[in-house]
Length: 449
Image (cartoon, rainbow, N blue to C red; front, side, top):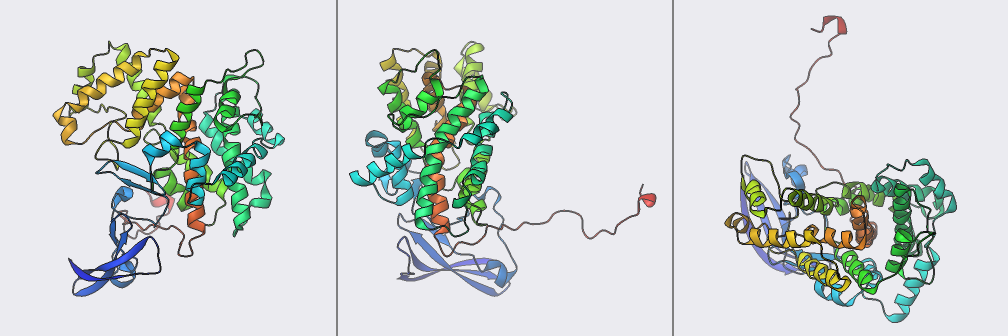
């Protein structure tokens, strides 16, 4: 099999975000397949193998899809080598400093920053849709208090299709998509807060129309009939930053799941519910919980950072430092820098000393000076410090992936919306290389050994 690059003239292919730049020729036993090269607006390159199986009988094998592009998207761009992240072209640092979660959600879903009139209307719609159907409380009642909040969240989101069936259509209109997007974004914080209250056996706290998105969520989480929650500006700001940083991250596991499920024309509720389940895993949305648990274990063992650095470097062992390294970033995760600073500022303003933050900083400093971590480009990622902020705010460990889900909601919605509006979308259907038994005749039970 031979690959040969053929330079060609740039050819606009009726796409605003890509252009053609020559071809790659794949020679398999003398049969030549010409694959057009696609170049994105930031210079990313791919060659299109859509006709590979039909014309050659071959497929590609790429476990984990680390070298496979599943779609063209205009939502988010990251460069793992240089360490930057942009939503709709805007650097994440600028959004974290200047924007709000609601404004960032609008940007991701609709492709531009809203003007004041658009933002006011968007915010007002959140108030309108903040309460959940009263009958949904019966679902919470049916769940045991021991249920993980992610189990409740995925079930409740999927169940919304039963409570709002008028929005479940194979080809929804733009207005219907807008309504379901705002409805889901608004109600998810109520569902998450109710899931928490259920898990601790406290009464539900309903949303208030006089509070904005983040303060409303915090009030539903922490208020009780005996002790009203005091809203602190620094806490609200830290939560805003965390939600913005988690709002989207290209074709990660959960986002790809939303797109794959949605490619069958499954409704948004079902697609998002599947994304929540994918996010639940400790290698994805549960990673910041694993970081806190790791730091607590190290602290209980005396806080010897060098000991655990050595354990992580032991090739014969199985110990892994959680919060270091990333599938995409081979440089510093830009979100990690922002969160580290945010954690410092929050704890300083609240006058809180968290020994886990000190331990995390010592762990980072030791790792970044160690040749093992340097050569493997194992830098702290977004999960390394985010759990410390959640912990400071009072979010329990089992709610960490739920917080991730709230933040990722606008990204999931944006990708589902982009996918169903793209006329070239096909139902996802990967192939496999079969490695099981060859044809085997059925053996009657009396003749089996």
